[in-house]
Amino acid sequence: MMAINMQNSPEQESRAAPALLRCPSCHVGDLENTDGQSLTCGSCRSAYAKIGDSGVHSLFVAQTDTPIKADIQAWWGDLYRQLYAEHETAYTAATLQGALSELEDMFRQRQHLAAMDMPLHELTGKKILEIGSGGGGHSALFKFHGADVTAVDITAERAVGTSLKLQLVPQGAGRAYQADAENLPFRDDVFDIVYSNGVLHHSEDTDQCIAEVHRVLKPGGLAVIMLYSRHSATYWLNIVPRAIVTGEMFRWPEPQWIGRLTEGRPKFGDTVNPVTRVYSAREMRAAFGRFHIVSLRKNSFQFDNFCIPRLTQIRFFVMKAFGVKPHRGGTLVYGEPKMIETSTERWLGTAIGFAWNLVARK
Image 1 (tube, rainbow, N blue to C red):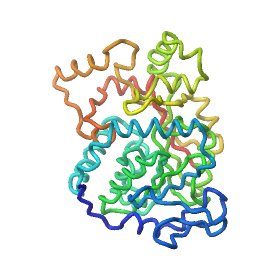
Image 2: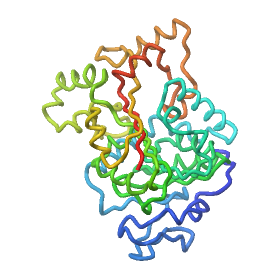
Image 3: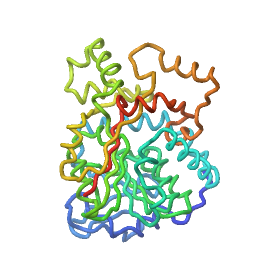
Image 4: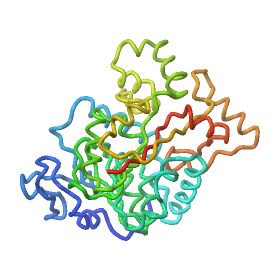
């Protein structure tokens, strides 16, 4: 069993955050925890139950579900089981604190969005929303730095996994919900920062997600977002050649064929990744046209980004032969230690990296 050393249970955290929530069905009513179980809208009386016995509420509105969203939940649930499930019961408050310190060190070495573009040492008391929390490592890191964290994920397993980690961090405050980024269950103008790392480009309607980010941010608040880059080695020298050879490019709209060729393969079902979008600099600026863009930078290039068989394994063994060890900080967010970029790869990443790292002000 996971040894949970927590300040507040999920139920206490839900009751502590009523000022944030609004009904995702009617978009008017407040959500109240009147019976200790469901959250109920004071206006339309819609009720939102907990996910099993987790204490985490699902605020996903069934009537807004679509076949693509169902596939998104199935695919990312499958990947969650591949990467995180076996680790979820391993952490204690002490071991998670150590893992978070390693994670932050790895992020800084990789020049990752979470360390380079998030003001980690200024987060105490700040209201942070993470959209697409995955296994919960990023949200737990922000809470570790004293933030008041709200995390959402469209996949129930990921919301529950995030909640488990948030409960183990005594600093700050935190809660997690299952929710749809296109229909966030929060009031207008409530968050200081909205953070999302490599998530919104996997949504059915990314523009609607970005509109929701703008809506829930306070005036002057920051959007800290990573989306994939079109003009990158990964796209032009890996994804596109494979799309041509396999014929996927000719069978599907662009977000679908890119999706089918990225993020891995299913292991526990048959659903492949349904959606992945890529953006040029011009497309990024257009997508965030309602914001003032503070910074926009690229990173994330590795020499295995080319379409050459077994190149990932070759890179790994070459680096290992030169004495480079995988960074243990990777386990919390990637499911295993991560062979991080060399200085040359980091330099090349500023031009041909796959990640756009954006900071934009409302």
